[in-house]
Image (tube, rainbow, N blue to C red):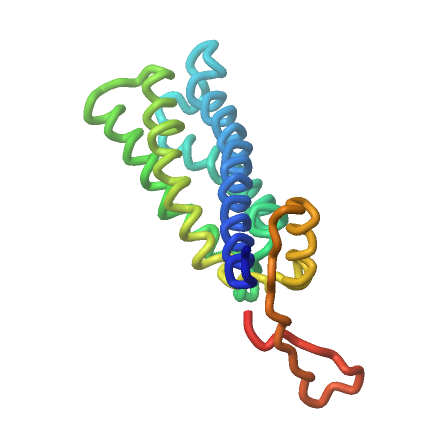
Length: 202
């Protein structure tokens, strides 16, 4: 037997899991674009030295700026579609700042392999910047984006319907399991002329 609080907890976990999966997919798309641009600029698509072979860090910044623009649009429309930004620009400035700060992680990895260790092959560049550095940056970005860019979650009833509707769906999917929920507490909106109702709690 499950109750309304348990059901809401389940929905929250489902939402978080979905955000993580979508964020990884969006990150993969943006990383793929940046990977192609970086290797074209630095390594000539593995066919010889590219136009920025001696400038891997500026090339990395250029490639990942393009990836960042793609990532922002997909994150706003898809990854964090159940969350909204309180920033007047839709969180774009905060998004850019977070990307710029977290980009220091792969840049630091690239600097170490290039300038400290002395490895300048395509494999060394890509492992340090596009594997190790990107993984570190992605973990940091997910939590920072969720907290500072798309910080306000949309109410569950705006996305999933009422708790009662979710309970009915769970009962239909699992006939042997009964889900009991308390009626949602609602109140009239002050001054409303159309009998609009709003949730008292989130």
